[in-house]
Length: 516
Image (cartoon, rainbow, N blue to C red):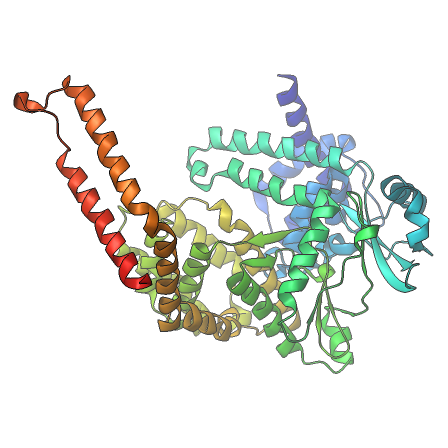
């Protein structure tokens, strides 16, 4: 009871904070909410504005409100910051402050955390710790020098008390999602509580910087084969649960102005951002899942520099295949095949009509192919996608949330550089290469080879396994019939058993033919 009241109070205080900081008016104005809905919202929120958190007055209203409410709210705002086509340009510009321009905590506190985590050796490794150069929702970054080699490094330090704040925010999210599921039964298809659980698991990784270091190391290994992509090196002796030390890399902000002034091709960079994401998702099954502008830099020669590896996504081979085929079906306008893949993957219930679903996919994709990209309203497109998923009973797939979100974020960043950037055109060469390498004859040959290897390993055991199956089945049948089979005959093997024995014998023969 106390917990529920606490969460209700937090929900109430969120509205009050939005009113006190001016975020409520900013949102109403941005989305042009007029008439009685605006009057009702203001009439409810205004008298209670005094109970809201004041936030940092140096920030614009919306980021000021979200930072005042806690790190989980800031994370949500960071996702929206990459979609000015959804939030509107004004709110999008405000939300960009959440990427790396939040209020930093004192450097003295950062020094305390470093000393606590690394012990007596801390200042033998790290020297000249400077003031923070970037501050985000969970941590901030300081320039320093790696004393053993004299190389410049970036030292990332968690915010004090961020774990406790994050647990409090997530508990409130669980309460709100559960409330929505009970009050609005139709929302259960979207599995809001499962979405919150997924969000909790993803962001929890950011609260242990050792895991982020491991992610950066793995991603760096995968990126070695990529042209013009750089991932900073991890300095493991300077890394612990609350401290992460990385190679220092300089680069330009992913903003049209600085990049154009440096003579770089914005259109090429925009397309490469999308291709880097897709290449890692499909080729490696491991991708950077927080690709907003604050986590990206561009070197003077155009090399893409990736930063902040707290949120990473991983896909199993089957999901990669489904994802690639769905993308390819949109690119080639083969909507029937796209619909079939949705059914094969279990994304759409089997009792729905494939043809009707294919028609819905066509209605979603054709406007993207047929219109100037800059004229497409992503807000309307997302609303139609939601409507379609509801009509066909599609449940939210938590394993695809990061993938879908990152795809949206990557496209959003690309379109800030090139408003005419077309996601499908940029994705086409990557998806086609993957399809050709992984779904063509060469991959079929690899699959057959893998099957042969498995049979070769298991072949010698198959006769023994078949004999054990026969004996176990005979014992079970004897117990059921009291020692006699039907009609008084001694119990014998059930007919299905002979099929199993035949199958085992066939496998043995196949193994012998392939290995002898």
